Image (tube, rainbow, N blue to C red; front, side, top):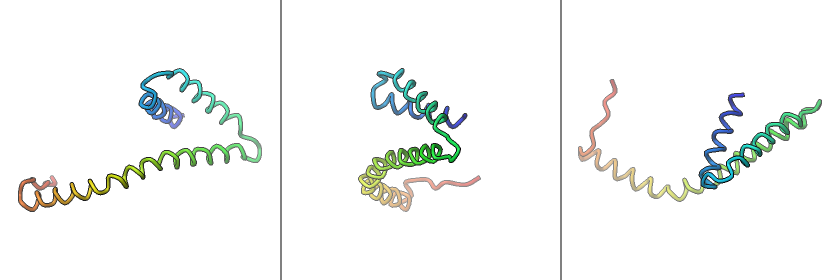
Length: 100
């Protein structure tokens, strides 16, 4: 149950970002239908459950692709900032972190 609430919240935040808050009721209807049909599709051989897991895995893969592209495109910025930070740290311009 908590997983459904969490995914509902994440999906709602993504929907708001993508569609600027429009048609939020449509998202709620789609999510509720997905939960209902996901629960109703289970049969004796668990083929429905397997299909749901495969669909969720594919969805997570699809969401990771833009993130991986973004990470790749920003890798040059990361390397540049890391070199700058290390140079400032070595020059004493950044205080070292002291563990308590």
